[in-house]
Amino acid sequence: MTQTMRWFGPRDPVTLAGIRQSGATEVVTALHEVPNGQVWTREAIAERKAVVEAAGLGWTVVESLPVCDGIKTHGPDWEQLIEAYRESLRNLGACGIKVVTYNFMPLLDWTRTDLAWELPDGARALRFEWEAIAVYDLHILKRPGAEGDYAPEVREAAARRFDAMSEAERHQLERTIIAGLPGSEESFTSAQFLAAIDTYAGIDAARLRANHAAFLEAVCPTAEESGVQLVVHPDDPPFALFGIPRVVSTVADLDALFARVPSPANGLCFCAGSFGILPDADLPGMIERFGSRIGFLHLRAIELESEKTFYEAAHLEGNAGMPAVIAAIHALSVREGRSIPMRPDHGHQMLDDLNRKTNPGYSLLGRMRGLAELRGVERGVAFSAGTTA
Picture 1 (spheres, one colour):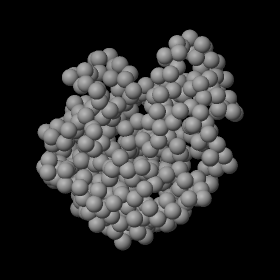
Picture 2 (tube, helix red, strand yellow; picture 1 turned 180 degrees about the horizontal axis):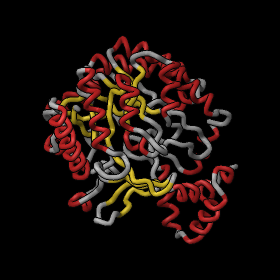
Picture 3 (spheres, rainbow, N blue to C red; picture 1 turned 135 degrees about the vertical axis):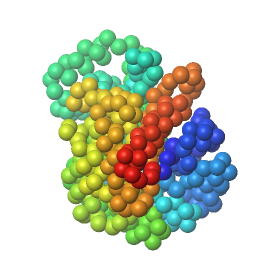
Picture 4 (cartoon, rainbow, N blue to C red; picture 1 turned 135 degrees about the horizontal axis):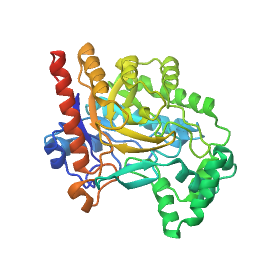
């Protein structure tokens, strides 16, 4: 695997020097300062790449080139947004970018309800709790019809919890869910979020799938011409939120997507954490199944507390079965003669980083620990297989 770390650009508290010292050879990054829907110019891409290379690192994977909600809803500005996306792909390809990550999650990117959940060892992790989502949805957002999305016992628990919360706790929950996270596309107030949800009225799962296919059919020819593979990040978490469907969640979703748009530019960012939430997920089997579609890897583990509640575990813990996952990746790499870019995802905030301002999930030391652990497993797998990592 090609070892990378995510970098959020010049304003990231984690420096390129720190990333290089972690053992990574590349960064995955984006032009976060460019507003959604605008073209990434060749000059801006080249300038950012020069900064990365001057630090002794490479940049061949973009994470992410945002897909605007106007594309996801197939709104009136669809053609304009599609052409801007095509132009950005052309410019990225011309600058040597080989993989472009995106997601098709409506409105919100990856979603958590606690960004600093304390673990028994004193480190902090990201956590998603279904009951907390219900508290926000039912009692803070007050989305019409939300009651039907929660079981009676969840509604009752959410009501008791809301009543016991202080105003500061309610505000913190609201900000955590909708204020925007590192790499997320939008930030909302609750009033804005409620209005944005209305733009998805009438868009069910079938319609959203059709819109996703239309996007890929429009941009994949440009990606192919530009030497770029588009890789979709799966839904995180992989189930509907706030009454809006999510359609890149399961093996069946991916099978349908690749059958509908068979272009080789239509690829997958394999996220062990997102897929690991699925009941009875066979992660090594998925790696074998999707094979050459996999252009980028997010390796993280989650610990399921219940069906829809989980926290980010250390990279070799949780339910991912990471040694078997890495063995499957190594076999795929050997079989296809390529090194797949990988990054450790959502590290714990730990040690000196507990006293520093960091992006939630993206402090240096927790990810450096994860990268070292993943590197060690890969080398052990390669040694056992009689190959090289």
